[in-house]
Amino acid sequence: MTESFPHPAPIELRGRHVLLRPIDPQRDVEELYDASHGSDERESVWRYMLSGPYASAEAMRDHYLEKFGKLRDPLGFTVVRLSDNRAIGMTALMATNTEHGRTEIGHVWFGIEAQRSAANTESQYLLLRYVFDDLGYRRVEWKCDGRNERSRAAALRLGFSFEGRFRHHMKVRGENRDTEWFAIVDSDWPERCALLQGRLYPDAAPY
Image (cartoon, rainbow, N blue to C red; front, side, top):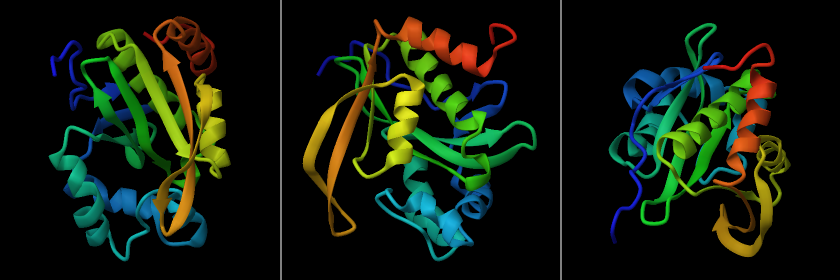
């Protein structure tokens, strides 16, 4: 397969509210574990993930975070809130196809304190801007469990278009999963970019 588009790289992406940095399992595990464990409410972030929650920070590091440190796909990022320099969640680029200029945003979760804040929106905006503007990709996908209303709402809020439902697409935790597909393509991006910038930075252009 000929690479026509560059592969996403493990770089830092900085906005006004968050910094996306490549996952470092040893450095990031304590804060990521604290953000996603300790109560039923905190652990609810794992409901539609393929794994988790974990019995300890060490288990989360060894059985979840370590794979991001070894792989370029998925290419995982820790989301750091700039106001207190604390890790509050994760996001990733995955299922990347460099021949066709296509990738997917996935493995997205945020601790409950960061939900419904600018952190999620800016994190995905930074990835979208990197993929479309810097790498020149043609398409970015977002997929979620059909029962995951929060993820579905996030996709639509970010400007992804709903493309359909794959029924019984996967078996997850012993249950059938219908997967909903969303996408932004390169011709959509200028309008979507402007809308996201207006929402995130209403006072001025961000960069």
